Image (cartoon, rainbow, N blue to C red):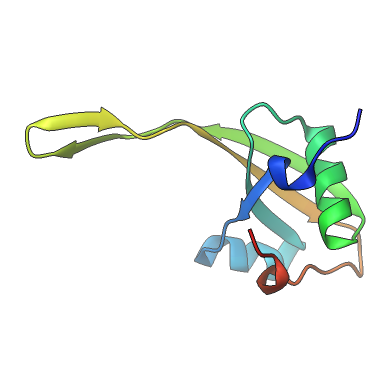
Amino acid sequence: MQINPHAVVLRPILTERTTWLKGKNNQYAFEVALESTKGQIKVAVEQLFKVKVDQVRTSRVLGKMRRMGRNSGYRSDWKKALVRLKEGQKIDINSYAS
C-alpha cells in the first residue's frame, strides 16, 4: 500500500521549544494526520526530506474550548510527532512547502 507523505505530515511545528530540541537532541516536531501510525510517519519523513529517522514519538493534543462572546466551541483535536534523526542527519524546514 502506497501512502502520500503530504497526507501524513501536515506541517512542521516551529516554536522555541522545538528549536531547542533540534539543537540539543536532533529532534523535529510535525503536525501529522490523526489516523497516521508511527511507521507511516517514519516513512513519510524519510521520503519528504531524504533523511534516516531513528525514533518517532507521537501524542494526541486535545482541542481547547474557545469562546467568542456568548458563543463557545472546541478547537479540533490534532496529533503531534517528535521525530529524532540519526547522527549526522539534518532537515531544512524552510524548504518544506505545504
